[in-house]
Length: 478
Image 1 (cartoon, rainbow, N blue to C red):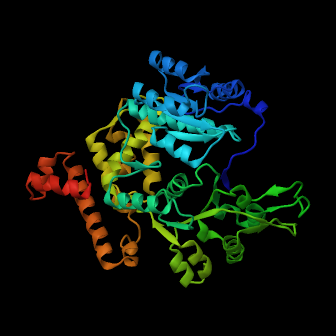
Image 2 (cartoon, rainbow, N blue to C red):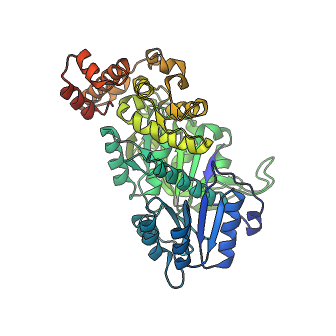
Image 3 (cartoon, rainbow, N blue to C red):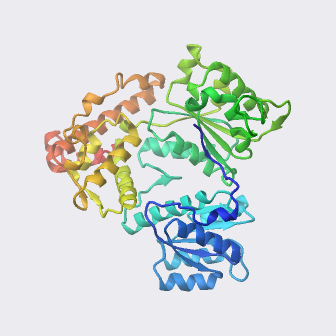
């Protein structure tokens, strides 16, 4: 099935009594001068389990923040007297760890950019067509707020993607250059590397960020391709009991993310190519075409160039999608990011399960770095979540990790041919990646062997301590 992150029209009556349980409730101040909107926001958040403080003017909100412990503020941009945008920097000055979500019924891109630059965590358009979007934004803000409080907020990061290794910094720069354009993007990388996060980052940093971001698992809807992608009219086929709007129409003016694009049939590829080329869709059972303005981002964990050579993927569609290629590196090529990611996932899991787990023992962290992670970032996240659940104390220990990680048995999970990805790169780039892989594995292994003792690891490596530290810093293997 497709996952559609698309605003959905919801009558205000549905606000009442709808359970939207967050991972962990918090205190949310809602600032809006419109009584109906203030009441609606209050009901949405109370139903989600939060403590809500409704305020109808900015000076009153500033007073509350000065007197009470508030986690998140949901504030209207335009209000009589002091506006939400004017109150934003004052709120952040009074409590730098406070997360503020701005909302506006007159949402414009410059307004959203100004809010984000002034310190806002997120920007929502009113009226809310999907109340879950409000709850999800508040939950994300709460998770970030709690990481701030625990001093575990990982930096640097871009639109939810965490990383400081050279390959990730290159990825961040590429995303920032690509996002403002309207060009199709093809994201390739192994399963679990975070391709959807990259797609969402491109959307969030583009001019379409206030519009829909529609996520489609292409493999899951192949049998209903035309109906799901293009929609159908009532009575178009057996079971079509009502009109259905397709995914491309749902994503109009926004972005559609076609995950695992390599899994669709050549017949479906032809249909998809036409939509991308002419920007028109025709519902099943209709003679009328409809114009759509959609940015297409596709992703695959297969090598599509090889699929084209083998005749499994159409060359013309490949070149349509391959305007801007983005390669997401596997976790084994960015082992220096593992401590950063581990602490990030630790803070999220601790907040999710309400457990006071705040750190990872050095020997456990060394084991995490020494592992090859065939499941990539997704596997690391699941491992940390499991460790938080099992942790009997405030610290994750070796015994909280899966046996193959704690015992250093990562070699049995090596990919069949780990050098294969290098063979598609130019010589210099392939050499750099191979060197990075060697240094990260060797240095992390030495740290694992010595339980994080740098002086001892340097002696075993026949290096002086300063040189060992220099290598650690250069290859981000610490």
